Image 1: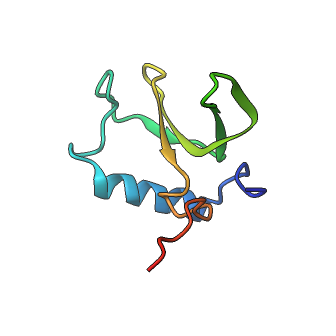
Image 2: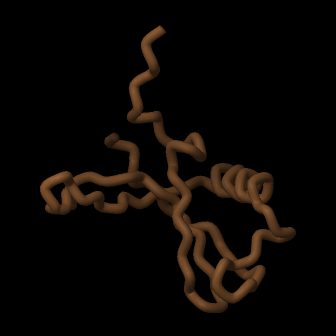
Length: 96
C-alpha cells in the first residue's frame, strides 16, 4: 500500500464529489451535525490507524481514507479510498 497516502488531483477530488452526491440521501449532502452545505473534500488520502486484535494500534499502517470537512462546525467524515477507487483493493478476489 505504498501509494495509500498521497495528494489527490483535482480530477480525483471532482470524482469523489460526484460519488458522494450520487450516494447522498439529502440534496446537497449537508453536514451530519449542523446541516451546513459548506463541506470540502480534503487534498490527501490519509491512513487511519486500526486497532489490532490484541488491542494495540498499528501506527505504521491503517485504512486509507479521504476526509470531508464541514467548514461550519468542523465535523469530519471519512470515505474509504478503496471504495472510491483511489487505491487497489486489499481484499483478495473470491475464488470461483
